[in-house]
Length: 229
Image (cartoon, rainbow, N blue to C red; front, side):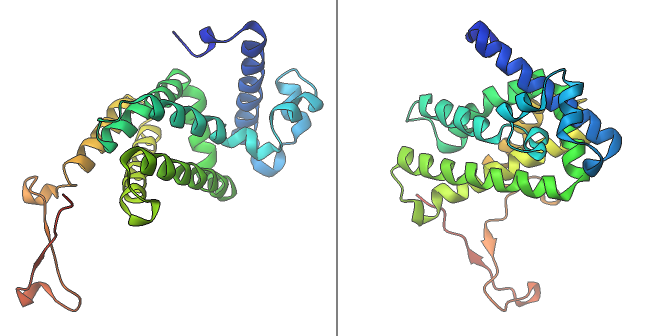
Protein backbone atom coordinates (compact mmCIF):
# COMPACT_ATOMS: atom_id res chain seq x y z
CA UNK A 1 0.00 0.00 0.00
CA UNK A 2 1.35 3.44 -0.93
CA UNK A 3 1.24 6.39 1.44
CA UNK A 4 -1.57 8.02 -0.56
CA UNK A 5 -3.71 4.88 -0.40
CA UNK A 6 -3.76 5.14 3.37
CA UNK A 7 -5.17 8.69 3.27
CA UNK A 8 -8.67 10.03 2.88
CA UNK A 9 -9.72 12.02 -0.18
CA UNK A 10 -9.13 15.42 1.46
CA UNK A 11 -5.68 14.47 2.73
CA UNK A 12 -4.73 13.05 -0.69
CA UNK A 13 -5.77 16.33 -2.30
CA UNK A 14 -3.67 18.32 0.19
CA UNK A 15 -0.71 16.05 -0.41
CA UNK A 16 -1.06 16.45 -4.19
CA UNK A 17 -1.25 20.24 -3.89
CA UNK A 18 1.85 20.32 -1.69
CA UNK A 19 3.72 18.13 -4.19
CA UNK A 20 2.61 20.32 -7.12
CA UNK A 21 3.90 23.46 -5.37
CA UNK A 22 7.23 21.82 -4.56
CA UNK A 23 7.63 20.57 -8.12
CA UNK A 24 6.82 23.99 -9.56
CA UNK A 25 9.24 25.73 -7.21
CA UNK A 26 12.07 23.33 -8.03
CA UNK A 27 11.50 23.50 -11.77
CA UNK A 28 11.40 27.30 -11.86
CA UNK A 29 14.45 27.73 -9.62
CA UNK A 30 16.41 25.18 -11.66
CA UNK A 31 15.58 27.17 -14.80
CA UNK A 32 16.01 30.73 -13.51
CA UNK A 33 17.90 30.70 -10.24
CA UNK A 34 16.77 31.18 -6.66
CA UNK A 35 16.49 34.98 -6.63
CA UNK A 36 14.61 35.17 -9.93
CA UNK A 37 11.53 33.22 -8.78
CA UNK A 38 8.69 34.54 -6.63
CA UNK A 39 6.03 32.81 -4.57
CA UNK A 40 3.42 34.25 -6.92
CA UNK A 41 5.11 32.63 -9.93
CA UNK A 42 5.36 29.30 -8.14
CA UNK A 43 1.68 29.46 -7.20
CA UNK A 44 0.64 30.32 -10.74
CA UNK A 45 2.68 27.43 -12.14
CA UNK A 46 0.94 25.06 -9.70
CA UNK A 47 -2.48 26.60 -10.56
CA UNK A 48 -3.23 27.80 -7.04
CA UNK A 49 -3.27 31.19 -5.30
CA UNK A 50 -0.37 32.67 -3.37
CA UNK A 51 -2.58 32.43 -0.29
CA UNK A 52 -2.84 28.70 -0.85
CA UNK A 53 0.95 28.49 -1.12
CA UNK A 54 1.29 29.85 2.41
CA UNK A 55 -1.12 27.22 3.70
CA UNK A 56 1.60 24.67 2.87
CA UNK A 57 4.92 26.50 3.14
CA UNK A 58 6.09 29.40 5.27
CA UNK A 59 8.68 30.49 2.70
CA UNK A 60 9.85 29.77 -0.83
CA UNK A 61 12.89 27.98 0.58
CA UNK A 62 10.67 25.55 2.49
CA UNK A 63 9.05 24.46 -0.76
CA UNK A 64 12.49 23.72 -2.21
CA UNK A 65 14.07 21.76 0.63
CA UNK A 66 11.20 19.37 1.31
CA UNK A 67 9.27 18.34 4.39
CA UNK A 68 12.13 17.63 6.79
CA UNK A 69 9.83 17.80 9.81
CA UNK A 70 7.38 15.34 8.27
CA UNK A 71 10.20 12.98 7.31
CA UNK A 72 11.54 13.18 10.86
CA UNK A 73 8.21 12.19 12.36
CA UNK A 74 7.79 9.29 9.93
CA UNK A 75 11.24 7.91 10.73
CA UNK A 76 10.70 8.25 14.49
CA UNK A 77 7.34 6.47 14.26
CA UNK A 78 8.90 3.72 12.18
CA UNK A 79 11.80 3.34 14.63
CA UNK A 80 9.30 2.94 17.45
CA UNK A 81 7.76 -0.06 15.67
CA UNK A 82 11.07 -1.94 15.26
CA UNK A 83 11.40 -4.69 17.91
CA UNK A 84 13.64 -3.67 20.80
CA UNK A 85 16.01 -6.62 20.30
CA UNK A 86 17.02 -5.44 16.82
CA UNK A 87 20.54 -3.88 16.95
CA UNK A 88 20.67 -0.09 16.71
CA UNK A 89 22.27 0.10 13.26
CA UNK A 90 19.77 -2.31 11.72
CA UNK A 91 16.88 -0.61 13.50
CA UNK A 92 17.73 2.76 11.96
CA UNK A 93 18.05 1.23 8.48
CA UNK A 94 14.59 -0.33 8.88
CA UNK A 95 13.18 2.97 10.13
CA UNK A 96 14.48 4.75 7.02
CA UNK A 97 12.86 2.28 4.61
CA UNK A 98 9.58 4.16 4.18
CA UNK A 99 11.21 7.52 3.47
CA UNK A 100 13.67 5.89 1.04
CA UNK A 101 10.79 4.21 -0.80
CA UNK A 102 9.03 7.57 -1.03
CA UNK A 103 12.14 9.25 -2.45
CA UNK A 104 12.59 6.54 -5.06
CA UNK A 105 8.88 6.66 -5.88
CA UNK A 106 9.27 10.34 -6.81
CA UNK A 107 12.81 10.09 -8.14
CA UNK A 108 12.53 12.88 -10.74
CA UNK A 109 11.45 15.41 -8.12
CA UNK A 110 14.13 14.36 -5.65
CA UNK A 111 16.90 14.37 -8.22
CA UNK A 112 15.88 17.90 -9.17
CA UNK A 113 15.77 18.86 -5.48
CA UNK A 114 19.29 17.54 -4.93
CA UNK A 115 20.49 19.51 -7.98
CA UNK A 116 18.88 22.74 -6.80
CA UNK A 117 20.05 22.40 -3.20
CA UNK A 118 23.64 21.67 -4.19
CA UNK A 119 23.64 24.74 -6.46
CA UNK A 120 22.45 27.13 -3.73
CA UNK A 121 24.43 27.16 -0.45
CA UNK A 122 21.64 28.96 1.41
CA UNK A 123 19.34 26.00 0.74
CA UNK A 124 22.02 23.53 1.75
CA UNK A 125 22.43 25.38 5.05
CA UNK A 126 18.69 25.20 5.67
CA UNK A 127 18.68 21.49 4.91
CA UNK A 128 21.62 20.90 7.26
CA UNK A 129 19.77 22.77 10.00
CA UNK A 130 16.69 20.60 9.54
CA UNK A 131 18.82 17.46 9.54
CA UNK A 132 20.46 18.55 12.81
CA UNK A 133 17.06 18.70 14.48
CA UNK A 134 16.26 15.26 13.10
CA UNK A 135 19.55 13.81 14.35
CA UNK A 136 18.97 15.19 17.86
CA UNK A 137 15.51 13.63 17.95
CA UNK A 138 16.99 10.34 16.74
CA UNK A 139 19.68 10.46 19.45
CA UNK A 140 17.01 10.81 22.11
CA UNK A 141 14.91 8.01 20.62
CA UNK A 142 17.91 5.70 20.32
CA UNK A 143 19.02 6.46 23.87
CA UNK A 144 15.59 5.49 25.18
CA UNK A 145 15.58 2.39 23.00
CA UNK A 146 19.01 1.11 24.08
CA UNK A 147 18.97 2.24 27.70
CA UNK A 148 21.97 4.52 27.16
CA UNK A 149 22.25 8.09 28.30
CA UNK A 150 22.31 10.74 25.58
CA UNK A 151 25.53 11.96 27.19
CA UNK A 152 27.55 8.73 27.00
CA UNK A 153 28.26 9.13 23.29
CA UNK A 154 26.89 5.86 21.93
CA UNK A 155 23.48 7.05 20.63
CA UNK A 156 25.01 10.21 19.16
CA UNK A 157 27.77 8.23 17.44
CA UNK A 158 25.35 5.74 15.91
CA UNK A 159 23.08 8.52 14.65
CA UNK A 160 26.04 10.50 13.29
CA UNK A 161 27.50 7.62 11.29
CA UNK A 162 24.13 6.50 9.95
CA UNK A 163 23.32 10.08 9.00
CA UNK A 164 26.62 10.27 7.12
CA UNK A 165 25.80 6.96 5.42
CA UNK A 166 22.43 8.34 4.31
CA UNK A 167 23.93 11.57 2.98
CA UNK A 168 26.66 9.68 1.13
CA UNK A 169 24.11 7.38 -0.48
CA UNK A 170 21.90 10.31 -1.47
CA UNK A 171 24.80 12.18 -3.09
CA UNK A 172 25.93 9.05 -4.97
CA UNK A 173 22.35 8.47 -6.12
CA UNK A 174 21.93 12.05 -7.31
CA UNK A 175 25.35 12.19 -8.97
CA UNK A 176 24.53 9.01 -10.84
CA UNK A 177 21.20 10.41 -11.97
CA UNK A 178 19.31 7.71 -10.11
CA UNK A 179 20.83 4.96 -12.26
CA UNK A 180 21.26 2.74 -9.20
CA UNK A 181 18.51 2.21 -6.62
CA UNK A 182 18.90 4.49 -3.61
CA UNK A 183 18.03 1.62 -1.27
CA UNK A 184 20.90 -0.42 -2.72
CA UNK A 185 23.38 2.43 -2.24
CA UNK A 186 22.17 2.94 1.31
CA UNK A 187 22.53 -0.76 2.07
CA UNK A 188 26.12 -0.61 0.82
CA UNK A 189 26.86 2.36 3.07
CA UNK A 190 25.31 0.70 6.12
CA UNK A 191 27.17 -2.54 5.40
CA UNK A 192 30.47 -0.65 5.28
CA UNK A 193 29.69 1.03 8.61
CA UNK A 194 28.68 -2.31 10.16
CA UNK A 195 31.94 -3.86 8.93
CA UNK A 196 33.97 -1.13 10.63
CA UNK A 197 34.73 0.85 7.45
CA UNK A 198 37.50 -1.46 6.20
CA UNK A 199 40.18 0.22 4.10
CA UNK A 200 40.08 -1.24 0.54
CA UNK A 201 43.88 -0.96 0.41
CA UNK A 202 44.15 -3.56 3.18
CA UNK A 203 41.97 -6.08 1.39
CA UNK A 204 39.00 -5.33 3.60
CA UNK A 205 40.87 -5.75 6.90
CA UNK A 206 39.70 -3.31 9.56
CA UNK A 207 42.42 -1.24 11.25
CA UNK A 208 41.73 -1.68 14.97
CA UNK A 209 44.68 0.36 16.21
CA UNK A 210 45.32 4.04 16.69
CA UNK A 211 48.47 6.04 17.18
CA UNK A 212 48.97 7.76 20.55
CA UNK A 213 49.29 11.56 20.54
CA UNK A 214 52.61 12.64 19.06
CA UNK A 215 53.45 9.24 17.58
CA UNK A 216 54.38 8.81 13.92
CA UNK A 217 54.15 5.83 11.64
CA UNK A 218 57.88 5.25 12.09
CA UNK A 219 57.66 5.10 15.89
CA UNK A 220 56.25 1.61 15.80
CA UNK A 221 53.91 2.62 18.62
CA UNK A 222 50.35 1.43 18.25
CA UNK A 223 47.58 1.41 20.80
CA UNK A 224 44.71 -1.05 20.38
CA UNK A 225 41.21 0.36 20.27
CA UNK A 226 39.08 -1.31 22.88
CA UNK A 227 35.73 -2.33 21.49
CA UNK A 228 32.65 -1.57 23.55
CA UNK A 229 31.19 -4.77 25.09
